[in-house]
Length: 150
Image (tube, rainbow, N blue to C red; front, side, top):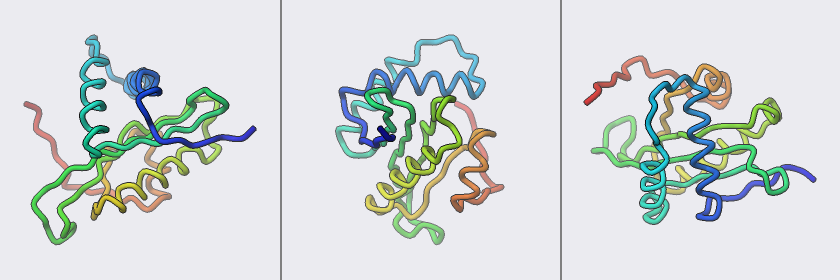
């Protein structure tokens, strides 16, 4: 049996949240807070209004890959006349299943969702591991990205 792809639905949300936390830890997060309630609240609200979509990869009934795309809107600008942006997150593949094209398939699916939503661009803060995938897909570095923590 091959890998199957399904959209995230409520029945998979708790597993999705745990995988997101695993991903953040794997990427070096050290904070000792319970992030699950905030993630649950975010996904409940944004799945309901259509501003968050996710595709999952399954081997049987086991989720082995995740993706996520949040849709936000900024004032239109020349690089993105619609003002609609896709923020890519939650790109994670179980270590046993890496290097098989699963992440690329998941990326394809959420980028298509962003295009259908009317987004003019997709952004991600890539992990070291993800940079190759995104560069091969056609993402380019934006050296002007800065962040101010509140």
